[in-house]
Length: 391
Image (cartoon, rainbow, N blue to C red):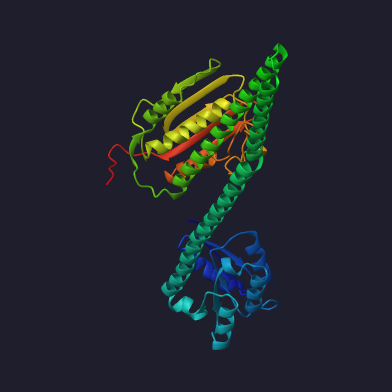
């Protein structure tokens, strides 16, 4: 990691001397000769450690710390007060205003190793802060995803799909009531009565088929919620060495494309392409992505599966020549409240499940797509070496 230090001191000679001393550690050093310049540099880029003089003309070190606090920059900067004389008063004021440490300037000369250790402590603090912020960001993303899942599923079940289901049930009920009335009142049953009863019966069968479609959607939604729960709660257990090419080939065989206008191209790596994974979970990912690929080619096209090693990764490309994904929505496709299949019983959960499963395998998904030119999803997993063993 490129470790960086900003020295803020009005003495150019002292600042340059400290810079020369620190540069021996291969750290990136920058200098500001007053507080205003220091604030500007901190607003332009991030520094791991700030060495701050207290007594400077214009803006003092304490005033500099006050400006950091007012700008909301206090929590992400590790400030070491570097001053000629430390008093109880300026030490307390410095720590109260957000400084993390302080050291006297003579100690830089007399005890350079101690000086270096204090700076190293700042680097470690920044590393821990970065990890903490990443965890907070991940927690925020998880909470937001959960909120969107609940909102999306609630909208689908209690909103449009529930309304559609109830409307079809009501229409079906009316159809059967009309048929019963015709049969009860018509004596004898004329050809006209028989034709009306048949028409109503046919309409009832159509609505019954619609109901079955809606129930299939609700069943699919339930299954995907179950799979999403498994993906979110996965602890990485039950993973064994599997060959990515063999798994992709088996998934393609199970998918069983029966559309004559879809051409399938297979290009599987001939050598060993082992990863550590759960075959059932990954098979679900491949099936979902192949299903999306076929749906993206309503007029026909080519579905391609390609496995290969690259830079220590085992990779699989799942590509189609379909409608493609517009650039402005490519970041949205992983959201639980977004689907390209609105009106076609899309749940919006499929790609989110794929993303979670791949991340549980310490992998990642790359996307290349353009409207009218098709889409390629590339899944990358850490490739096991031939001598790798699992406990």
